[in-house]
Image (cartoon, rainbow, N blue to C red):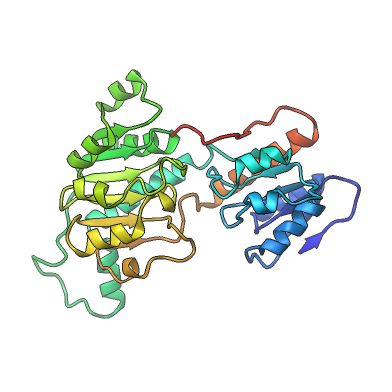
Amino acid sequence: MSEGGSARPRVVVTRRWPEAVESLIAERFDGVFNETDEPMSRAQLADALADADAICPTVTDALDASLLGRPGIRTRLLANFGVGFNHIDLEAAAAAGIAVTNTPGVLTDCTADLAMMLILMTARRAGEGERELRAGEWSGWRPTHLLGRKVTGKVLGIVGAGRIGLATARRAHFGFGMHILISSRSGVAPSVLSELGAEQLGLDALLERADVVSLHCPSTAQTHHLIDAAALARMPERAILINTARGDVVDEDALASALANGGIGGAGLDVYEHEPSVTQALLDLPNVVLLPHLGSGSEETRVAMGLCALANLTAFFADEPLPNRVAAAQPD
């Protein structure tokens, strides 16, 4: 860790952020930065909670009740780098008098782009083809080699109609002529359904009709293993599952079994139930595309996320309303 010394509020940044954002934090606060970019241990997180006025965590930092309930906590703000905050126990944070913020909106386009990329890669078997070519096993073009499925005109089921889910739906509908089905606990505005020519259905009905199911719901107690063996059994045999939301929305063991036994046709995943570990059975399967949590991974988006977190920090220490305060699971 490196730090600057002053009477300014002390802010601990748990992972490396884009240099431009770290420089701004160092200018405005007593910044403590993680130069090794290794995940902080529980002991390090406990020390940070006792020493820092604010912590900027991300998905690799499990801030649970046992950490947030410790005596002697100095931290009063968790300015999360990312939209998802299921790694933070919000009730424990509130009990400790700690505000929590996130960075919504700025990563919508990049994550929707990645969801569309996973749909195309999985449907067209691009992962299999790339691996075959790199292994020196490609023997040349032939009419029946790696036949995938086109996505144009197919049915796309969107589970979770928040910013990212609807952005993915727009890309699929207007770019590829896909028919859109939407399942959302919080409902969908009639104007949005009209814009997309979409139908709003319950989850079971969506799973039964969709050629591709793309997950965009938050991680909550209600969505844990939302896609389990029973849900997968409702999907057509050639259907594709895409997950750019949170890993624990899917039962990975059940998914691996469905993929191996022909229950569904393929899957494209960017998030995992126990990151960075991935279920070995998934790693062994050819009909799944696996990416290392790249949803927001563009330079522009990661800088924008950092600036959003910085805006939350600045407002907090100026005693102004927090732009992106979270207190409970946000609507999907």
